[in-house]
Amino acid sequence: MGRRLSISSLRRELGGGDRRSIGRVPTLLERAPEHPELVARLVPLLEDGDPLVRMRAADALEKLTTAQPFLLRPFTTRLLRLAAGAKQQELRWHLAQIVPRLSLTVRQRNGCIRTLRTYLEDQSSIVRTCALHALAELAQSSPSLRPQVDQLLRKAIRTGTPAMRARARRLLAWRIKERLSG
Image (cartoon, rainbow, N blue to C red; front, side, top):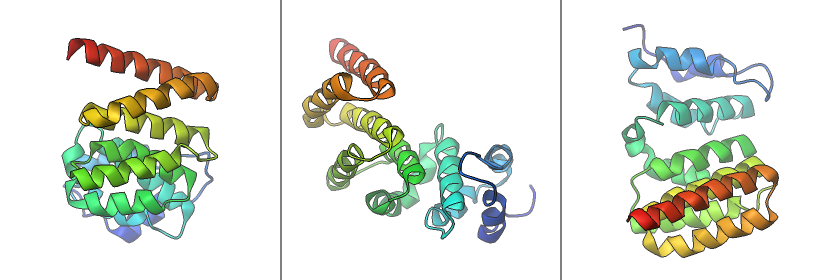
Protein backbone atom coordinates (compact mmCIF):
# COMPACT_ATOMS: atom_id res chain seq x y z
CA MET A 1 0.00 0.00 0.00
CA GLY A 2 1.34 3.44 -0.94
CA ARG A 3 1.33 6.45 1.29
CA ARG A 4 -2.05 7.76 2.36
CA LEU A 5 -3.66 10.42 0.22
CA SER A 6 -4.14 13.75 1.93
CA ILE A 7 -6.85 16.21 1.02
CA SER A 8 -4.19 18.74 -0.01
CA SER A 9 -2.42 16.23 -2.30
CA LEU A 10 -5.76 15.26 -3.84
CA ARG A 11 -6.62 18.91 -4.31
CA ARG A 12 -3.38 19.45 -6.24
CA GLU A 13 -4.02 16.31 -8.29
CA LEU A 14 -7.58 17.32 -9.20
CA GLY A 15 -6.88 20.97 -10.00
CA GLY A 16 -5.54 22.65 -13.11
CA GLY A 17 -6.53 22.56 -16.74
CA ASP A 18 -10.02 23.49 -17.81
CA ARG A 19 -13.61 22.30 -17.44
CA ARG A 20 -13.48 20.24 -20.62
CA SER A 21 -10.91 17.91 -19.06
CA ILE A 22 -11.31 15.21 -16.43
CA GLY A 23 -7.70 15.76 -15.43
CA ARG A 24 -6.07 12.97 -13.47
CA VAL A 25 -9.29 11.30 -12.34
CA PRO A 26 -8.56 8.03 -14.23
CA THR A 27 -5.10 7.77 -12.63
CA LEU A 28 -6.59 8.45 -9.22
CA LEU A 29 -9.19 5.72 -9.74
CA GLU A 30 -6.48 3.23 -10.70
CA ARG A 31 -4.85 3.88 -7.33
CA ALA A 32 -8.13 3.65 -5.38
CA PRO A 33 -7.76 -0.01 -4.28
CA GLU A 34 -4.60 0.97 -2.39
CA HIS A 35 -6.36 3.88 -0.68
CA PRO A 36 -9.43 2.96 1.38
CA GLU A 37 -9.50 6.55 2.68
CA LEU A 38 -10.17 7.98 -0.79
CA VAL A 39 -13.94 8.45 -0.45
CA ALA A 40 -13.51 10.22 2.88
CA ARG A 41 -10.95 12.54 1.26
CA LEU A 42 -13.03 13.26 -1.83
CA VAL A 43 -16.24 14.28 -0.04
CA PRO A 44 -14.80 17.49 1.51
CA LEU A 45 -13.42 18.45 -1.90
CA LEU A 46 -17.01 18.68 -3.20
CA GLU A 47 -17.06 21.99 -1.30
CA ASP A 48 -13.64 23.21 -2.42
CA GLY A 49 -13.25 26.80 -3.55
CA ASP A 50 -11.94 25.71 -6.96
CA PRO A 51 -14.74 24.64 -9.33
CA LEU A 52 -12.35 22.28 -11.18
CA VAL A 53 -11.50 20.48 -7.96
CA ARG A 54 -15.20 20.21 -7.04
CA MET A 55 -16.09 18.89 -10.50
CA ARG A 56 -13.32 16.31 -10.61
CA ALA A 57 -13.85 15.20 -7.01
CA ALA A 58 -17.52 14.61 -7.85
CA ASP A 59 -16.57 12.73 -11.01
CA ALA A 60 -14.12 10.51 -9.11
CA LEU A 61 -16.62 9.90 -6.30
CA GLU A 62 -19.37 8.99 -8.76
CA LYS A 63 -17.15 6.54 -10.65
CA LEU A 64 -15.60 5.08 -7.52
CA THR A 65 -18.95 4.26 -5.91
CA THR A 66 -20.78 2.87 -8.94
CA ALA A 67 -19.96 -0.69 -7.91
CA GLN A 68 -19.49 0.09 -4.21
CA PRO A 69 -22.33 2.37 -3.08
CA PHE A 70 -21.88 1.26 0.54
CA LEU A 71 -18.78 3.49 0.66
CA LEU A 72 -21.14 6.50 0.63
CA ARG A 73 -23.07 5.44 3.73
CA PRO A 74 -21.15 7.62 6.26
CA PHE A 75 -21.68 10.69 4.08
CA THR A 76 -25.41 10.46 3.32
CA THR A 77 -26.49 13.59 5.21
CA ARG A 78 -23.59 15.65 3.89
CA LEU A 79 -24.17 14.54 0.27
CA LEU A 80 -27.88 15.34 0.47
CA ARG A 81 -27.09 18.77 1.91
CA LEU A 82 -24.54 19.37 -0.86
CA ALA A 83 -27.00 18.28 -3.53
CA ALA A 84 -29.64 20.65 -2.17
CA GLY A 85 -27.26 23.61 -2.23
CA ALA A 86 -25.17 22.88 -5.32
CA LYS A 87 -25.16 25.55 -8.02
CA GLN A 88 -22.33 24.31 -10.26
CA GLN A 89 -23.77 22.23 -13.10
CA GLU A 90 -20.99 19.61 -13.09
CA LEU A 91 -21.41 19.08 -9.36
CA ARG A 92 -25.18 18.82 -9.77
CA TRP A 93 -25.06 16.18 -12.49
CA HIS A 94 -22.61 14.02 -10.57
CA LEU A 95 -24.59 14.36 -7.34
CA ALA A 96 -27.75 13.41 -9.26
CA GLN A 97 -25.96 10.21 -10.26
CA ILE A 98 -24.76 9.58 -6.70
CA VAL A 99 -27.84 10.21 -4.53
CA PRO A 100 -29.91 7.24 -5.75
CA ARG A 101 -27.12 5.00 -4.40
CA LEU A 102 -27.64 6.25 -0.86
CA SER A 103 -29.65 4.35 1.74
CA LEU A 104 -32.29 6.95 2.56
CA THR A 105 -34.94 7.31 5.21
CA VAL A 106 -38.39 8.33 3.98
CA ARG A 107 -37.73 11.91 5.03
CA GLN A 108 -34.33 11.99 3.29
CA ARG A 109 -35.81 10.44 0.14
CA ASN A 110 -38.57 13.07 0.06
CA GLY A 111 -36.00 15.85 0.42
CA CYS A 112 -33.87 14.26 -2.29
CA ILE A 113 -36.89 14.09 -4.61
CA ARG A 114 -37.57 17.79 -4.01
CA THR A 115 -33.94 18.59 -4.84
CA LEU A 116 -33.96 16.49 -8.00
CA ARG A 117 -37.20 18.13 -9.14
CA THR A 118 -35.46 21.52 -8.91
CA TYR A 119 -32.67 20.06 -11.05
CA LEU A 120 -35.28 19.40 -13.74
CA GLU A 121 -35.43 23.20 -14.16
CA ASP A 122 -31.65 23.58 -14.51
CA GLN A 123 -30.21 25.39 -17.50
CA SER A 124 -28.01 22.37 -18.27
CA SER A 125 -29.65 19.57 -20.19
CA ILE A 126 -27.11 17.14 -18.68
CA VAL A 127 -28.28 18.10 -15.17
CA ARG A 128 -31.92 17.69 -16.22
CA THR A 129 -31.23 14.30 -17.82
CA CYS A 130 -29.29 13.03 -14.79
CA ALA A 131 -32.05 14.24 -12.46
CA LEU A 132 -34.68 12.45 -14.53
CA HIS A 133 -32.65 9.25 -14.40
CA ALA A 134 -32.12 9.63 -10.63
CA LEU A 135 -35.85 10.06 -10.05
CA ALA A 136 -36.54 6.91 -12.09
CA GLU A 137 -34.02 5.02 -9.95
CA LEU A 138 -35.58 6.30 -6.73
CA ALA A 139 -39.03 5.26 -7.97
CA GLN A 140 -37.86 1.64 -7.97
CA SER A 141 -38.05 1.57 -4.19
CA SER A 142 -40.86 4.08 -3.80
CA PRO A 143 -44.17 2.96 -5.33
CA SER A 144 -45.85 6.29 -4.51
CA LEU A 145 -43.27 8.10 -6.65
CA ARG A 146 -43.80 5.94 -9.76
CA PRO A 147 -46.82 7.77 -11.25
CA GLN A 148 -45.06 11.14 -10.88
CA VAL A 149 -41.90 9.80 -12.48
CA ASP A 150 -43.82 8.21 -15.35
CA GLN A 151 -45.52 11.56 -15.95
CA LEU A 152 -42.13 13.36 -15.93
CA LEU A 153 -40.73 10.80 -18.37
CA ARG A 154 -43.67 11.26 -20.74
CA LYS A 155 -43.26 15.04 -20.55
CA ALA A 156 -39.52 14.74 -21.29
CA ILE A 157 -40.33 12.59 -24.34
CA ARG A 158 -42.56 15.38 -25.63
CA THR A 159 -40.57 18.47 -24.67
CA GLY A 160 -37.00 17.54 -23.74
CA THR A 161 -33.78 17.92 -25.66
CA PRO A 162 -32.93 15.02 -28.00
CA ALA A 163 -30.74 13.45 -25.26
CA MET A 164 -33.52 13.82 -22.69
CA ARG A 165 -36.10 12.35 -25.06
CA ALA A 166 -33.89 9.33 -25.76
CA ARG A 167 -33.13 8.77 -22.07
CA ALA A 168 -36.78 9.23 -21.10
CA ARG A 169 -37.88 6.67 -23.71
CA ARG A 170 -35.38 4.12 -22.34
CA LEU A 171 -36.36 4.85 -18.75
CA LEU A 172 -40.07 4.60 -19.48
CA ALA A 173 -39.56 1.28 -21.30
CA TRP A 174 -37.53 0.10 -18.29
CA ARG A 175 -40.30 1.25 -15.90
CA ILE A 176 -42.97 -0.56 -17.95
CA LYS A 177 -40.88 -3.74 -18.08
CA GLU A 178 -40.37 -3.46 -14.32
CA ARG A 179 -44.14 -3.19 -13.76
CA LEU A 180 -44.86 -6.18 -15.98
CA SER A 181 -42.27 -8.37 -14.31
CA GLY A 182 -43.18 -7.24 -10.77
